[in-house]
Structure formats: structure tokens, C-alpha cells
Image (tube, rainbow, N blue to C red; front, side):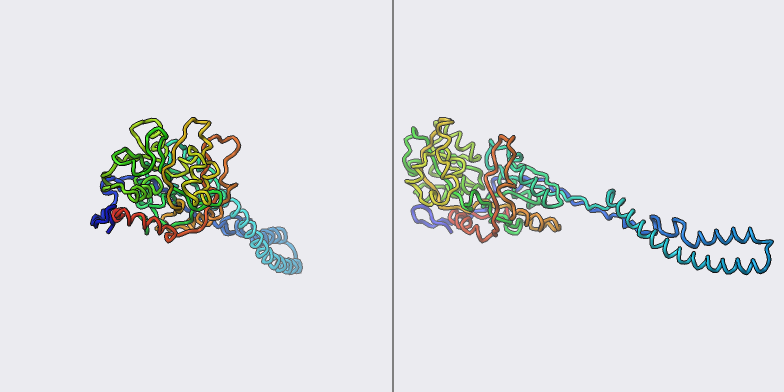
Length: 417
């Protein structure tokens, strides 16, 4: 049971996203192929029986000697019998020797030949589902170093799919159409029993990040309470830094969030998209009063001194603090900071819980061992670099803060869990 801003009981406990249609979106799953290579043993590939063994050779010698000595004396025959006996003994040894040589040769030849054709274990194909955090980022190109790293560490072929929404990312995993995923922190709670947290991504040493609410300096907005009756742009409906945490911030400031995010807000007009779109629409449209985004989207446009005044945690923890305000001069856009959230655990990388394949454990180990160098693009890459520089071990307990946010908003994820 959540409390409304005026202290009254709010009995709504809603099945989250029933109206969002999130359960209809899916990804892809690729199968795993195996091959039983031939053992190439001596019996089939050049053993003593197949390559002229000692018995065969000995037999040929005896037949020749018997033909040539049919008219010779009994003494010569006796001598021939002695020779025949010796030849048979030699033939037996030859059979053993040829069998050993043939088997060794056959095994080596068979293994080498079969290893080149059918003996090698074929790689497993794993589908990597990517979360669409920012519309202007070619995310599949952005993640290419991660894909190449995993393929170099594990006998796996990575195929990627950009999901249509945060909800679709989780649905792909729930429907067994993805093996690995980049998901929102909220999906950890929604997807308990569906995905396993491998680790929390870190950016330049920080495993926490921040949500911001910004406005344009000419909109006449100086505090969150001024957003009453205005349009506020938010991120995806499941975005922690773009929607869920900002809604708690607006609620704490006295605004009536109504049934948002899975229904209409009461004290303001809520519009959902993604971090980039939310920010750019606010910049370009006078009817949008504020934008709720992750600091990774807003900080480059906010003067650093504004963060100094608003949040010491941001100054101490955020990987975005150092670059705050860097894009203002280049792009001619400056935002005004209204609020900064408490620290949020960064988004995790996860694997599908019911994926039963030896490659899963190997992939998880490789993810935890990835380095900043592994995640770097070559000098010829001019796109957006990966925002994280490593992954530290984590689990669902690290996302308790997200569960608390959902409790405050009166949200339930029963239809997604």
C-alpha cells in the first residue's frame, strides 16, 4: 500500500504494464549444434588387416617356396619346413607389428582427418538482446567489441537483436528467444526467475549512476513543483533513471503522479519515449517543460557547477561528473538542472535462467573478466563508444533499491514475472 502525497491511503496495487502490451514482444533464440566426430581407429583406417599384415606376407612366401621346391629332395623339403616354421613365426611377429603400426597410423590418420572434417565441436549460437536506451545510438555497432570478446573467449557465435523497448527485452528472455541480455535495473525485479544477474556494469570505476530532471532556462521552471499541469517527458515505461525514479522524485515534490507509469499522471502530462528523444523534444518544443533522463544523456549539457550545488553524491560517485557541460559550446544547447536522484545501481548483464548449456557458465565467467581494453573499438570507429568499462559480480539483492521504488509507486510486476 503506497501513500499519496497528502498522506491518504492509496489502495491501488496494480498489475504493471497490463495496458502496455509488453508481453507481446519477443526476440530470437538460436539452437545449439553438436557433432560426434569419428574416432578414426585402426580397424577402419589402415590397421594390420587392411594394409598387408604379417600373416598375409608370410602366406605368400610359403606358397612361393612350395611351388619352387616341389621336385626337390625330402631333405630340402625338411629344410623348407624349417624355413616355413621360421617364416610363420616371423609372420606372427609381423602381424603384431603391422597391427600396432597400422592401428597407430590409422588412429593418427583417422583423428587428423576427422578432426578437420567432423571431429571439431561446432560453436554454439547465443542471441544477445540489447536494450534500446538511446534512439540515436547504433547499439549493435556499439556492442561489437563485447561480441568479439565473447567469441574469442568461448566457443560461441554471438548474434544480436535490438529490442523495441525495455519490456520487449525482458519478454524475449521470458520466451526463450535470447540467451544473454543488456537489461534495465527494473527488469531484474520484474524478471526474477527468468534471468540470472551475471554482474553489474561499471563505468570508470562507478557501479552506480543517477537520474536527472532538467528544463530549458527560458521555460520559467525553477523547481519541480512548477511542473504542475505541464508536459514532462520521460523515458521508456520500464526505465529506472528515465521513468520510475523520476516519478518518485516528482511525487516527493508534491505532484500527483496518478496511475503513472501504467496509466495517466494526474498533476502533469507524462510522455514516454527514450532518454535521447525526451531530451531533444524538450530542447526543440516549447510545450515540453522538463525531461527526465539518465545523467549519461543530460550531464553533457548541464554546467558542472550546477551539479556542485545540487548533489554531492553525484560529484563524488558519478562517472558523468567530469564531462558535465562538455557539449554546451559544441552543440549550443544548455540545460537547467532541477533535481538529481539518489545513486542507482547500474544496469546488469544477465543470462536466461533456464538456458541449460555448458557455454552459459563460460560466458558468465568471460563477462566478469572483461576489461576496458576488451570493450574498446579500433581507431577507425567513429560511433558511440560503450558506456561501461567492466563488469563486477552482482545478484538480485543489489537491486533492492529498485524494489523500494516500485513499492513507493504501488507497482506490481506479476504479469511480467
